[in-house]
Image (cartoon, rainbow over all chains, first blue to last red; front, side, top):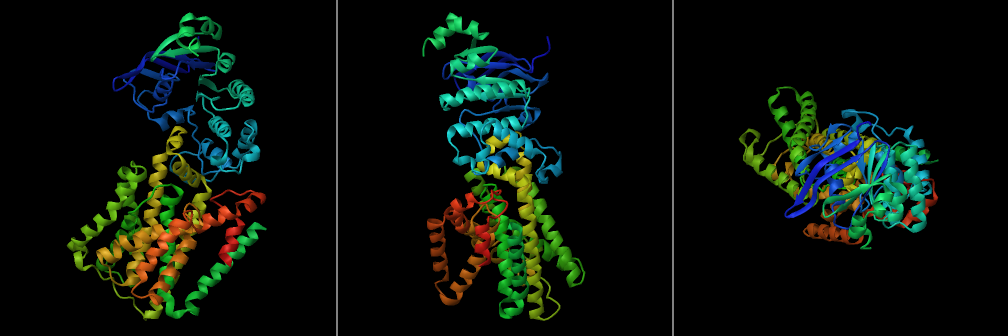
Length: 248
Length: 336
């Protein structure tokens, strides 16, 4: 058994008196799709924020590729190949889709010179392929802010993919997307995982989606890991049903 | 087709610019100032327009460059031109270094906080310069006299500023076309996202700030010699005139675009001079009214307004990279 790509060990995070995360243990093996579910306010997004370095954790350790990243800042962690998308979609609204992709594509040059580097033309083909992949190629010259919400989500997804991360954290990728598009998105997530080799950790409220995608699911409630297991185990776990599925 | 239009535009602008001081010899100083205004607007737009960081303190670098040059000219013991060139280089470098030093702290601020933080810079610099004997304190400094006739001096500075504005324009054009331009636009649109995507946001911000400072420092250095007298608060750190104008010109023309600040600077300078000539005594009132009209009716600037009106036409044309290459409609507007 190889070392997991991401290993979260007894991470806790409080905001004032609210314990958002308490002693969370979670591991993401390389090449897998892992799901993270839980009722609203159970601490899923807080955990994401802790992993990508958005805020310091109170205790515990986060390791990415066996490297301690608990103390690192957001851009440093991102450059290691650990990216996330946001629940409230974040794109560069004043720039065209193409420009959004261009600035997300990895920097091929390094150091001071890279600040003023020209845009590498050989990336264009990859960018065009990626835009076609998410179905936005015809909209490449439209300002990203003028896209619909669902299209913005797809653009954000494509921006994350073009950056070729090793691990991608997706915060509710299907929220606000129409049901027919969701099926396409599931396919694309699978392709990203299998063909591009990107490991995925997905927060999702849509049970059909997450049961279909994930090989292993963690269920959070009240800031703690309530249960974990395969989709079948989670679906039949009475505690989970009581805390989450039963409530909906 | 498109490159032909651009070439024609640039060539005609070049011809007009070269011929202007010969055709209008009485206005040489004003024409020289026009190019200074263009540099003001262009450099303010790097941070204010392209990066979304509204700075009210850019005048600091202008004044610092002016003083640095004057000190070199006073103390170096060189003859006029070598001292001037050395002083201009020093003006740019000192301003750049200053930007690097204060940028590290100041650029940690965002949005309104950054704007307020920069507001103090120019004011503080004016007060410090007004109390520092080494640079003449409140009585200011007088750069050495130009060796030659007044008309030669004016022509010299006209071409000097023309060349400098051209260098500024093309440097920025080149920067905006590359990764730098996209990165600072990304910072403008969503800095958190840019960080989350692993961009070196701090580096880009400090680079943008330093580039602004360098171009303004050089401009200030030469400007002291054109005006012939450096007053700490009315010339060098003239926040209430130049400092405000640079923002106004960029916004009036269309911030976040390459040509917008240029158009804004030209129109503003001409309008302002007309107000002085035609409405003497009321020129500031007229200027104030103009500002209100611009903000109310053209919040996106002249170029932004044109873009909005012609956006349908633009979409049907060959797609271009917005921000980097000006669409055809603007170029036609420019050349008419």
